[in-house]
Image 1 (cartoon, rainbow, N blue to C red):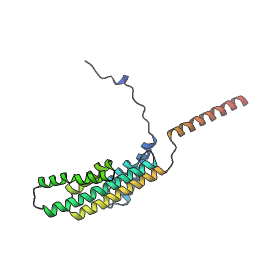
Image 2 (image 1 turned 120 degrees about the horizontal axis):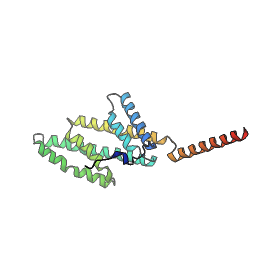
Image 3 (image 1 turned 45 degrees about the horizontal axis):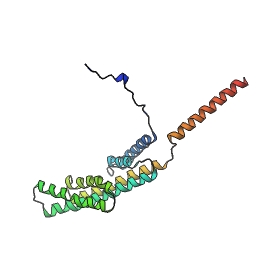
Image 4 (image 1 turned 30 degrees about the vertical axis):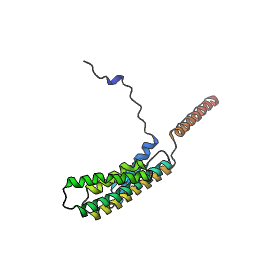
Amino acid sequence: MNRFNFSNMDMPRFHVGLRTIKTIVVVFLSLCLAYVRQGLANPLYIAIAAILCIQPTMSSSKKAGTDRLIATVIGGFWGIIVFVSNNYFFPQFHPIFKYAIISVCLIPLIYTNIHIKRPSNVSTSAVVYLIITVSSSGAMSNVQYLYNRLLDTFMGFLIAIAVNWVKLPSEAEMEAKKAAAEKLLSSKKDADENSA
């Protein structure tokens, strides 16, 4: 019988890096902000935006946040148009017919993202679009959802930018400081031994 022997496996060394720490901080701050704004903010959407916007560099964080905001606007815009059109022109139609319209109307959403040269935004736009067109109860709730989603995304974006703005030492800088401290302690110890 062939058994798995875990004792011979090389396990990678567990390491908490700077990006992990930043992610933990942005999630904590996002959840705290949502708590302070109880009922007005969705902690999940703020935290998701912050996680997606925390990037290795400030410029990549700004790009990720901008892309997310633009994608949310595009998805919300087309979602509201399709939702209102579906309910105005086809209120008594079978849900399968409405689902076909919702699916086909992804074409202008995809085209809009490609036309503005942001094809990577398609998935985020489509998620917002589907939430509005499939799981909403009314046009005003759609507008309110879009507003809240934009606000939550913007708050997550700002939290990620603020955390990325704080300059924390890199791992290489930490290692260099540690080596310098060890060298200083070693030379001090040698000096103490020579003077004694």
